[in-house]
Length: 512
Length: 74
Image (cartoon, rainbow over all chains, first blue to last red; front, side, top):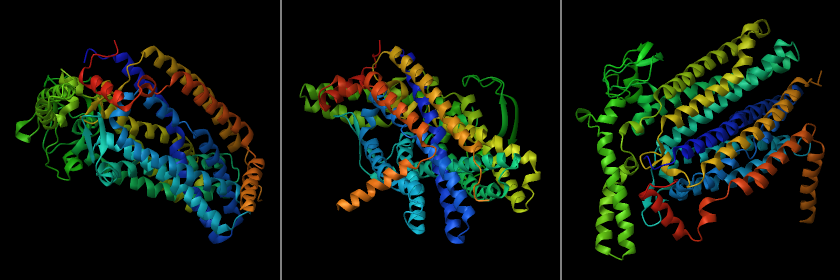
């Protein structure tokens, strides 16, 4: 492991994280507002009330700005795959190729065709056709998100594939297993419902600003009713899918699960730490290490969350590193040994093939196949290098869950007071709603950090660690691109947000 | 057929022409795309395996070598 250029790995990771962060500012709002707009337009078509048409058009304009400024930011990620992560791109190529190709085709044909009708088609196509286009934009953009999330889910739970030792590539053997793996299904549902929730906060927050300013009150109360109803439904779905996702993580990424809950020592009847503050990151080798400065626990809840059994054993970091015979957990020490055997067997196989020594090649291949499931562990000598940043994962997870719960409350209160026609008097709620826009973004990023920091050091779970995924390039060139990217995209982001704010502040409903 | 193409063209042409928020936004989008494709992609993001190796066979041999002898990035 000491042979790897960790500066290159860190800079490449920083670059990818920064790009993904910029990309994810816009994508979730696109995913959710497209549905909110489609619902608003449906009400217009059903009622014939012109105000609903103007409401639809207002949010459609903001959707359009968001869509336009977010367009193509994701392409940088694909550049980075080819330049910085070439080993990874080659290793996963066939698995990623199909979903991303489908995404490209779908995004291009569905979104670009129907978005044009959605924006330019008012009074040019029939009401019904326009409404259908709006729904197809919503469905299309969400379907294109499906494929990239399926690809990400595969990295966390690699199923439906076969590693070809001759080409060093994974080949898909079961497309449906990749698409419908429980991890992929839960990841997709959890991510899109969280994006819908964030979008609902976006609509409610902007509407709240108008109510604070006492401008176009009925217009934005109506917007709030749709967004709060949509947000309440999707945030409840988000909690359900999040709960199911936790069980998948427990099953396929037990180390991430332990990190999410700061669980260093496994136990039966495991309590859930609802709120906790680490005093310091404890050493898993030292059972006397003080783990918490303060915590509030819910008895048996973690066991129940993990296995739907309040008495189930939940492994901690220590159990995974050192093994737990009683619970049938193989130690990381053993997995490292098997991984090293697999790496050596692959090298022997390639050498034997080159020397045309069929017998030795077959024998090496058998050893490789037997140990392949621990292949990635072989790059490490110290099992403690296989532990993610526990406090960061824990705090990110609890920030996400805490904010998610807060959002449900905001939706309930907003819906209640807007239906009772008292929302304009609830200044405190309006300010909370307004500030929930950045909080929504924070929750999105916290969730992403749980998924991505929590799975470290893996880029493909158990098979490829992040440090072997990078290209053999000079890390200073990565530093330069990080710097260039940060400056350029921050300047563009500021300009884009200004356009969005100008559009919001300058709006006046012309229908009065 | 010609009529349909003309209709589609006019649909987009008139749509873009009547955009109210578009001009500055389009400018930013074009600047962004220019930076991404004409600068970043061209000078900073070459495809490592495509530019350094001629065939898939060479690429796979290289990646296996990287995976089995982790003494890289000196």
